[in-house]
Length: 314
Image (cartoon, rainbow, N blue to C red):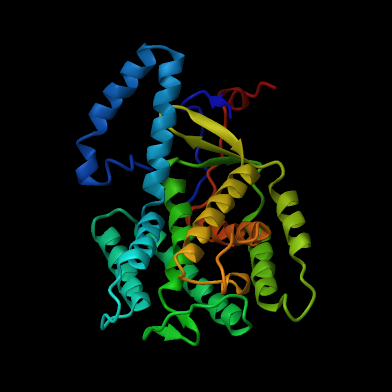
């Protein structure tokens, strides 16, 4: 990752997106800490590059944790209910998770931890995920072994929120790190790739699985794309493909936690738990493309212009 000179960029015109304010300033309980954080950062910078790097690393971790808030809380409840949910409770574990997920979503909107635009992305992804779950459980790709009242076919309704957690993370991290891009592929091309990916998820057990072709198409589209993200005062950069792959890897880790708690099981795990096959990483990578496209349509693509490029120098 490289450091980019601060404040030397322009935002692409996008009527759907206004001037971005501090994520902390948008939430009153955190607003009081903005000045304290500025003093801490200034003190770190005064102590030299190593201290400043440590401060930015810590700040990066805190921002990532904040972006993961919805998914982390939901994952925490998966673990908690696996270990401590009372046997014979009038409300089943899955139904409790469903009602808890709704409560978390409402609370995040009420506390302004999430914007309405982000909630729209989450709702769309919830629907997309639920439809895919109904199809995949019907053909035996995985199973939900416990009983529940709130369900469609063999799919408890809380499962849509697990897909929504991916959309929530992307929407929040986009805002928290003030994403900018260079050489970003057209959104229409991403929409076509996402549609083909979703259709392949639904049909790959009956017809030819074109997953490899879809991954190659994603690599071609994003091969030259760089994402610029602001940790503190400067924008740093990373190949977008690397960022999407890392997120897919962490989703794979979360899926292993989900199966270890018995929330859902693959056929190979019904008698004895084992790691989710690493090949599933390709599925999560393609799923990331779908969720990324939805968030990009809502947020728009802000173009990064470095000081050198803005001045017309090579």
